[in-house]
Image (cartoon, rainbow over all chains, first blue to last red; front, side):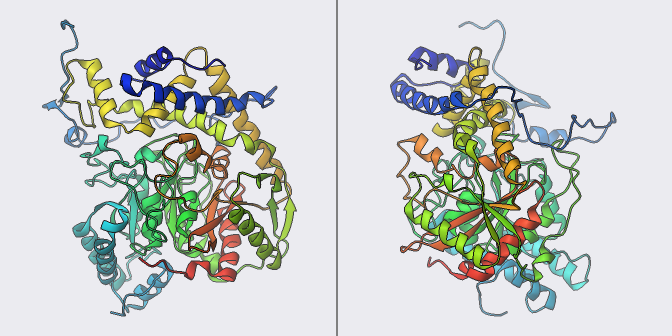
Length: 100
Length: 489
């Protein structure tokens, strides 16, 4: 695989909702390419006819819970960690109709 | 009260049952040790002194009334700080969760409290359990009790170091790629990663959900079994938790099992030139001890383990990038004051909240799941995961237990691997294949270097064969007595 470029890293960061400072871009890029080239080792494994494993479990199907109303967390507890709230709403900066 | 001693959990149990000491006295003893040594070792992020003493009083009443006294009733224990306990902080080693207060109990915390255990505090760890040296904690690194300035291992470094330093008789950790077993080896304690599904993950701050598992760190094998027995069991709150029947394992350790006929697999191909010669000599000496104890040492081949690190560093970051998407600066994390709109709230809060290693893994995970790379990296790694598991299952047709070193080297100096993340990742070479295959693994002390750094061996078992692991580990422990050595603080 061709090594990733600065613009690739910026694109991945945008997808991951992370900001990368231009001053650290070179270092991030070289670390990233070094780790990726190590994981390329996987390419040499022969996986013909091999099924992927998502996770290891003795269950053969997804266990479903009963469709029954049960008590859930108290609202006050749910909101206690919110950085900003109004009553029982998470308060966020304006989303629509904003000037850029 | 007898003079402060080097108690194991099992010894404390006997003293409590005989009534020769109270849980309050024991708890005060450990709280004093934490107060005295934590500033130097940095193993605790928070200590809940008042709650602990209340829990100890309740335990003493329970013991006095002979009311459902269980192995952990009255025993002080610490939780890694990614394990939720209601109304207590849980930072997961991240400044992003600096002020987070758990709204509910994790299942494991609830089980410990129901058993009458005395939770004394939350231990330091690498941020979101990502790291092998505890240096990725936003609250500063933990020091190895055996050698100041050396890494305690990670990510459950605070738990392992607290137990080694006798600040608690037992602690819980979590293990995704080795985060219980690697610090156990570095700190000279016993650390178990149970079979995937054995212990509920409900209320554990998730890192990589197909790999994460909670387990105990203790001074001795029997102590470990006592904590493990109290944790395992099906939990309807965790859909991956197993319905496999529970068993009491610690009672099997009242006597040493004769290992005659037990088949221990050893893969010589794992001892490559990348292994520190001290570790190589130590694992070969450990094999000799098992042979002397009557075990049959059998060569096994695990050819795909060489792909373990590459496989892990695709799968775990991929899962982490999804799990950590929930930290958005809106619901339960700090929000950047620079946030002017919603996108800013996400990106700026996350950029300020997460540390460098966590960001690195989120980026890596986002990349391997992105269009055009999914098949090459993620799907391929999932297929290699099948091969690694198959290697183990093939080997287990002929052997009962597989023995490896726990780590490729003893504890390294803090700061020595920070420049190069990949070097740090390679220190998990022997531990990552075990969660990849969903198997149980235990690290036990197997000796010391000349400068008193502990070394550990790892025993890997068949799915749900924790009891066999404990028995095999116990015979070695009782023969070698490495667990009796105490670090000078």
